[in-house]
Image 1 (cartoon, rainbow, N blue to C red):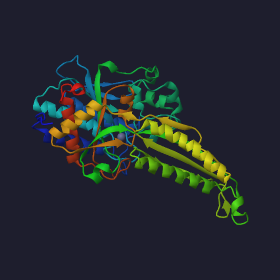
Image 2: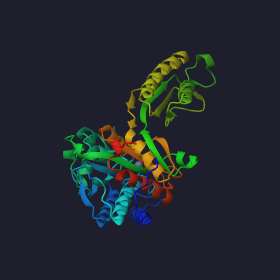
Image 3: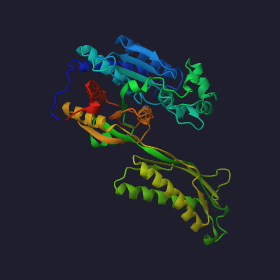
Length: 437
Ligand SMILES: [Zn+2]
């Protein structure tokens, strides 16, 4: 573990460069509260323009792919060696904060800035990518899987999905939005990656942490072990029978609220049990409501609609939980005389981060004297799509207060400095996927 880190004597200048870029990005995309960078919208384009300009001052070569993602490449020592990709997204949720997404792109630029200042040529090319539309779920409805930029880049976006996803602003399809923005949805629809996957060494994404763990445990930086997969019921329903809330004896009721509530408690107890067994799991029922047209103070409620969003790093548990939901809906429903129907339950597999890259990040952190904590990502990221495409993938989290997806997110530039320095160290290793220690 005792090895000396690469010499980047002017690192603080690179952090000032990054800080200045954050400030200009905030100004260019400011809204009444927070910032405004809609997927395939004006604010997102402004962010791309600003980042492209900054990359060009660092003599990076810009290209834009069919999905509109920005690629800025800095040449390495061996042009034929597989290259590093690093970066994150430049869009944001409505009235979001300045760092969710942008921090990963600016970190890549800070690394290139530092290498230039130190006169270091990295072992392999480094391409910093600013992805489009990672927050597609905030700007497009319809049954789609969001992350349009990175999935488009990787050949994972199909015409059907681009025609089903519709802009919440004006109802036009994603296909038309991509085309109107000057990019090539017809090419994306062929399902082929926009880059040669075989020429990619790995993908590393720095992102602010969106949960409270790094703050509460006192670590400036996190090394992500994986991105949780999901077991989701989007259209679950408990159906009973509407009745007078005073006149009908308690035993004769088919109360949908009490049925759904018992089911909810049963799910929570199972989740707590699995967590006690040491399994990674979290769960929420984000929607849970009676029918506003029909419910009343004086009625036994006949219907409750609800959702279940259970997440875990453990794929086996995602499948087990699906069966658990189905079995217990049936058990509780039949005992109470109500019908609990969880509807279709979708499972999305967790994304594993590369073990060799995780180990290398831990070694790099130790050499930099940086305390980094290993943790799971509860939110989805562009990195998950790279992992799904078979590309060795790593993620670095930077401590951030007040969560994200709101204008209060607060990343300390000193913490960013440590996370980006760790990224630089990883990208400077000659062959971190096959390190011998
Ligand atoms: Zn993000």
